[in-house]
Length: 105
Image (cartoon, rainbow, N blue to C red; front, top):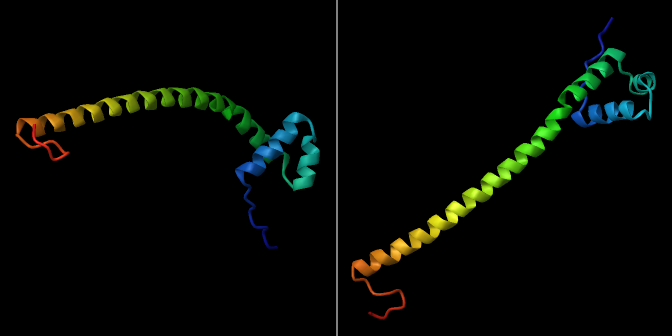
């Protein structure tokens, strides 16, 4: 007897199915019949979903701290850019090079 090929499910499908179960739109039995799933597979998806749910909120906190760090680094880059321009001008003046507009001082 030939074995049936193993099916794979997208993360979106798993999430949608678990949400239908958790919101009560359909029972576990209905979902299993409709999508030809075993109850143990649906239970595993549900448990994985519930276990990983706190990660969603951790990601928000990490995102906020990352954005603050990015803003801080952008300020540092801005200051260093200004300092570099000042140093370039000072170097030109100290070496006796005329200003960029072609006139001598």
